[in-house]
Length: 263
Ligand SMILES: [Zn+2]
Image (cartoon, rainbow, N blue to C red):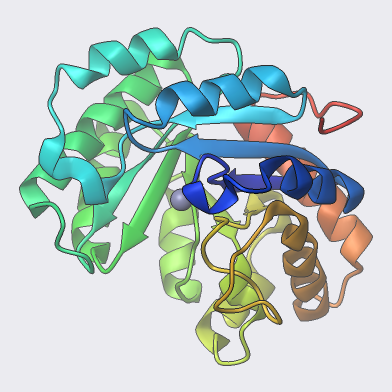
C-alpha cells in the first residue's frame, strides 16, 4: 500500500499514455495520489481527474514560478473550487528564488494569501521551496506566531537535518521523493535517518525528479515504490512498513480515507 503524495498527472508529458501510467501505479500498489494543479489552467483538469478515480485527490493552488500573474482576487476562485469534496489541500505555493520567473515580492504575496486560505478552509498547505530558506522560514514563523502550528507539508524536501528540524518544529510534514535515491544526496540521507517516521510522506513530483535508475527521464507514480525502498535501507527498516506508515501519514495529513483501489 503506497501513497504518492505529490504528482502532476495533468502535465502534457502524460497526454499520450495517462491511463497506462495510472494502471502501472495501481499495479505497483499505489492506492492514493495527491495530484497537484498549480495554475488556473490546470485546476479544472486536476479536479476532473480526481472526480474520475477513487484514489485520486486534488491539491489546488498557485505555484511560485507563476506568481508574476498572481492576483489576490484569485483567492475567491480558488476558494470556490475548494468546495469540491476531493479538493484536499492548498498548493503548491511557496518560494523559488532559484528560478527568477516571478519577482520575490509577488511570490511572497501569493504564498501569504494561500497560507491564509488553507487556514480558513482547514486544509493542509503544500509548500514548494528552492533557495529561499531565510524568507521561507520568516513567513512560516510569522504564521505560527499569529495562528499556532502549521498543518501541511514541505514537498520535495532536499535539505539536511538542521533545516528538517526547523520545519518539524513549525508543525510541518516533509515530502521525500526521488532525490533520496541519489548517491550524492548525503545531507538528505542524514535527515531521512533522523526524522520521526510519523512526519514523513513520500512522493514522486512526477513527471519531474525521477528516482534512480530512471534519473533524468520522465517520472511516474509507480516509482514511489523506489523511494520507499531507499528510505527503508537508510532507516534499516523494510519497504512494506515504510510504505504502510507513510500512507497512513498521508491519510492523516490530507484528511482522506485510502480507498481499496486507486482507479
Ligand atoms: Zn510539484
